[in-house]
Length: 416
Ligand code: PLP
Image 1 (cartoon, rainbow, N blue to C red):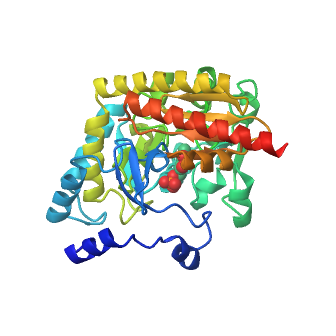
Image 2 (spheres, helix red, strand yellow):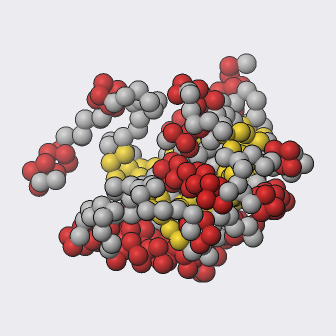
Image 3 (cartoon, protein in one colour):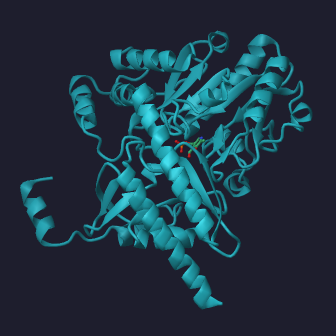
């Protein structure tokens, strides 16, 4: 921005983009949206200069908060040295990031792409190729009710919400849905026709529903017994969100593949499919690829991010902050008749609203009280502060949520 422009902006409030975006953008999001102009840490400012506590975190992307110090320099330096190369060439940030991921997670190999959906598409393709290479009979994939894996072809086919899938049918065939957390049903669900099982350790978009430990362990045992692959979707839960680098580490479960994205690049689009050697050995050059995947600037951003998050002291602090938030949300659930449950793992949390109270209305009221929240599932509202949130910011967030819930209940009281 030139100095002239900055001066003009200071004198005259910037016109809002809301009107423009309804005219020019495809109507896929509820437009018009709040226009954000800047951010720092847990805080964001709208185009009119109003300040919000941002507990959406770019839908669990901005783990280190808005505009973390040092990131722009790392990315600019990399862009200044070597930007896009495509997958035709190797570069140091890509290899260093792959090494850091392998070291941190115990997997052996990495495939890079750009988004969570792309990562899940790749993982499911790899699972079918693996089944072929290993001579397994089945090609079916099991996913779960309430699960969300993205909007790309394969990922949306494995996503449960019918309204996300049905307009685009026919989808990728051979995907069946089981009941999440139902251990008793697993033997019947996962038979010899199944080459892979896809699961989130905590269903995030589905309303923040943690897997029961015995469920994940049973999935591991059942897939192992049949030789099929366990694919763990850590797009939302990964990168420290639940208090460990991967949520599955808390369950002591490892898959044949894990997909990470969202917070990996601190806002730079990147995803990583982590694979065991045994699974990687079933893939061949040319089978799959991605022009932008694992580009040097995105890898530099992700390397910088993982170096900050994958530290024992950092993760221990996330767990302490999570305990504070958990207690605060439990108190709000006790106090407010509008909240039927508070739940989650680490700093991936949600409150479920009681019948008669509408999540979009709570999101709107919270915004009026200076708190940004995002829905999850049909009945829940997610609370996703950045991992660097301070105790004072958690206290402020809880106060604002308390006020928004009081307003929500008052509206219902005055309507009845
Ligand atoms: N998997 C999970 C668990 C997610 O939460 C999401 C996005 O919310 C995705 C996959 C899809 O990621 P993306 O939107 O980057 O394609």
